[in-house]
Image (cartoon, rainbow, N blue to C red):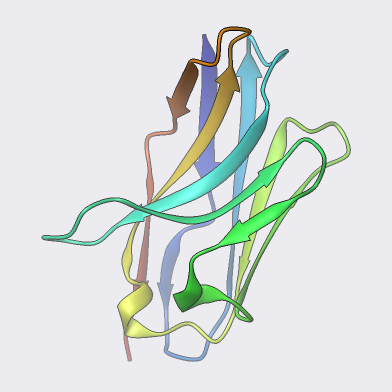
Length: 120
């Protein structure tokens, strides 16, 4: 089992910045990538950004140029640097880690979520 703990959420004004952190522990060997999802009230959870072990990154269009995902050298910590925040970025942000088995099945692990609120 992989245990994920997020930190860094909070209240910020529009145009401000926040940095989210997520540390993985437990059975971290075999993790193929990590990422951040978010879920706003009344909306489905969406992928915000992800990063593979090889360093390839993916971003949802709405955050490109504003958010940056990175991983620590130990590869068991992932960060999300958020800048130029907008009210529509308000959501609960969830850390994700995934493993892909030899037969192609993906196993997802989730953190408990951290609230990000962008408001004047």
